[in-house]
Image (tube, rainbow, N blue to C red):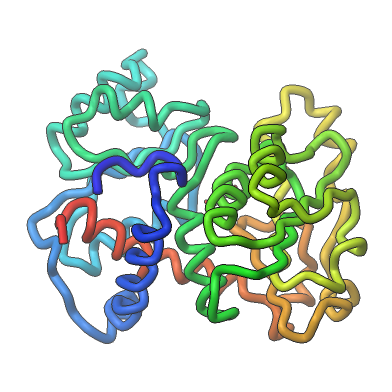
Length: 304
Ligand code: NCD
């Protein structure tokens, strides 16, 4: 495997391979077993946008496999503030590292980076574009709790317009055969190309504006944050902020086996009372970032 830019690069076989390897790495991810298959290797971790889970779980994954990490989180202390281009930054870091994990506010930045890199680029989020490694850990979490990746009714809730995690996840779920419902405030609907893809592949469920309309038939309730930083106009953000909240009353209307996921950070779209419910899986989901990224790094850098 070389660059990981979008879920379109990942076949069903590759996805299953990553998930199976990740399962075999759970003990190493938790520090209960040791594996140093990436000893002596270096990961370049360059984050032009804020991140907690993605950056720290990549760093943990690399460290647990015996490798090292260089990079930056925020550009304040780098030559980017002097005006260095993304192309030059990538050229340079690819001279130091064996792979580069890149997060950038511009859609298409990761793809662009592949043109200047001599090592694999892993997209850790490009603006409102894609977030393929989040999708891998989302799929891992779904399989872990539902035992399968097909024949599920998944409701994607929240900012479907600017949310990159739901763009990647919708495309990936459609590789397996599922029904996907789209629940968003008005103006934050899923981009047309994703909707058309779901319709063409016969996997489009319903599109609506309130989770109440889908809750009773939902297996996976996947909630997202309104992506404040992507709004060109703060007034528009204010109109949709806090539009709906997932609370225990709503969650208990779902089927008994339903699970609630969220890529996090959560602002106010899931009330803290939901955290104690057995359906709440978002912190397990975040922890799954480590074994999944370990599996991915071992394939991309270790070549195993
Ligand atoms: C997401 C992201 O950055 O796209 N976070 C993450 O990687 N877990 C979701 C978000 O910021 O809302």
